[in-house]
Amino acid sequence: MFIGLLATCVLLLGILALRLAAQGRRQRSALTNMDDALKHSRADAEQQRTRLAKQSDIDRMKTEFVSTVSHELRTPLTSIRGALGLLSSGLMGKMDDKSQNLLRIASSNTERLIRLINDILDLERMESGAAPALLRRCSLFDLAREAVEAMNSVAEAANIRLTLHCFATQDAVYFNADADRMLQVMTNLLSNAIKFSPAGSIVSIQINADAESVFLKVIDRGRGIPADKLESIFNRFQQVESTDSSKKGGTGLGLAICRSIVLQHGGTIWAQTNRSEGQTAAGTTFCVQLARCARASDEVRTKTSREQSGEGVILICDDDAGVRTVVGELLRQHGYEIIEAGSGEEVITLAHEQAMRNAPVPPISAILLDLYLPELSGLETLRQLKSSTVTEAIPVVVVSVSAPSERLLRSGEAQGWVQKPFNESLLLAELRHALECGPDERVSQRPIRSSRLTV
Image (tube, rainbow, N blue to C red; front, top):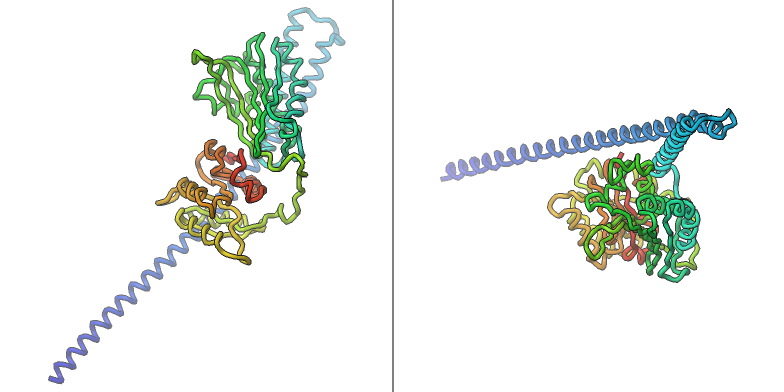
């Protein structure tokens, strides 16, 4: 009896030992897998850092190349323009009508090439962040009136009449802007409207405002723009018809420059085709919406060095750990505190938890959100954040491979947009812009800045 009991105990102990050994092997295997996963994650993060560094180098080389080539072209073009001017003036001797016509063509194309180079340089400087906007209090009405005065001679030569209408009190149309750049937007839009309007027609400029935004419309009675090109006309070198460049002149960059400037100011710009009663095209309306940011009596506050370097808690949400690591390190170097999340559910949980905590734990200042997330999508995550009174005031900057969505930006659901692969300086600028307004303005502010940061 005793021997049988002893044998049973020995058997049970053996089974237990085997189970413990199997469990130990499983634990060691799990630890090995975790170690391998960690190594892979670190390798992916390092590869991502390398890719971003290479992308940054390529971006820098592209900017330097465009700048160098453009500047190098300016020198011979200056000589060509001067020589053609001397010949055209008759100082070098009188020329027959055929020669004068050839000189006129050469001079016209020289001026067109100079405008193209200047436009390319303007775009590159703005998109690289090398030409920051110098903001001050401006009157949208005063800027529009100045633009009309500047373009009146061009309009009269084309037998076009310019009209200016302000549907808000003049005290209500003040906003923060770089006056020279906004004037460039208006003159570009007016030039475009005049170019495509029939003789004897009217180009109308309309101004309005509400509590959060100022609005500008430039309305012409030209041929209109097809629905499928209302967005693409803001791209570089895009025109409604391929023959417009030769027939109407221009570089094909005017509207691209307008969009870059408006986005730099945290606004949005779009086009819509006018419709008459018979539903035929009756011209185009270009619309610009800009946030006032402060009341007309407010002064523009100068940023401190602390604000310029970055301050606040940023929640980074991306299902790619490498992206979180790279972006987190970038923001830490500029003074931000970082929280990471790998899913939409985690973002919502962390945002609620941080918002409900008391000081000294700081709340989340902004969220960088990828749209392509597993299970709960980034879009649904964004809508849940904005539908909750606890988290609706947290500014959200979308960081996605997708192009900016005008609907999300104009509705205020997203406070900014960065398109992957991103440029570091513009990512930081986009984040700073989202943090600039106070908590009460974040929910209601329209329009919202968006940046297409493709490289």
